[in-house]
Length: 461
Ligand SMILES: [Zn+2]
Image 1 (tube, protein in one colour):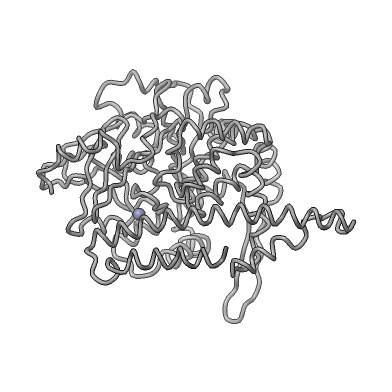
Image 2 (tube, rainbow, N blue to C red; image 1 turned 135 degrees about the vertical axis):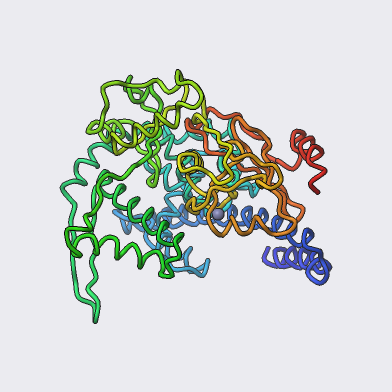
């Protein structure tokens, strides 16, 4: 068998020799992309072999009547050695493989075809481990109907996509955990040479606003030309505010964005909410979070006339710490705002940041640092939510490279296509209610709508 595997690798090497020596940009990029799919399929095989190895370890220990309380003892370390990696995290990997092969056949199928990478799969399986086997198969059925669910998502976003589902089933547990977290908050200091190190833990409703405040503060300072690293700035913001005197109070009025459906807010629906800077939280926790800043005169955002949204958001920001953004019933979009200005106005920028959550480049989980014109302003691109997207600073620069093109393919929901080195990738703003969006064809290269779209933009080539 090993000889055959070596032979296969030889064949691949021969196949690629020409490209390695003299392939053009797009030949190389496409070969790298194809190899990535093959590598993922091999990772699937390693997962299947690991699962089988673990079962054999179990059988062996049972026969010998040893390790009754830990019957798979040693399996994780053996696999880690074989994979030339630290054993840390391999027990969790094995837990995941059990889920993969026992509860989620459609996920396993996608993995075997190389459609999901190992990093994505580890994140997905780890999140699935928080619910019962029954709910895992329910998730698998949903995945079968949305096989593109993890397309273009980095591990963090892939995990979030699953969390949106799992939270509906572990919400009560989540609430108890939150109450316990408040009892566990602590701060510890210890000496380390010339430094004092400290570590601590805060419950989510305290920790998220604090982290968001530091994050926004360091971004602002960097934009104004501060040369220090973001973590240096954040340290000063945290400590400087506390000890530098009363003229620099730690601001507590931090605006957080919380996206939830009106059903979840008013009718006790279990659909999770999305808290900016944190991720999905259960609807119960969301309701608790906003309980303190709840306004009596509720405004129905769907009934507002054009131009009133900004005033509405303005009003909300001044009266409450949390901006609540609703989605229309059954809809998967936030309500957009438009402007004729060249630079993105503050509120529109915020809207884009909340809508996109992380950088819109496929597989990048980076923070949104810039609001970018998809079609550049000097080429007639509008300053609007439809032509705007959130990008991290690295991806924002990459976009300016010659040959890298981005287009708006669909406005509602907003979908963009990236064309680079002969490859096409699709990027969609995350749906507010995770399962409402129409699935894209799994093999986007063959999609008819994409070729029609490419013809439309032939002038850009
Ligand atoms: Zn990015």
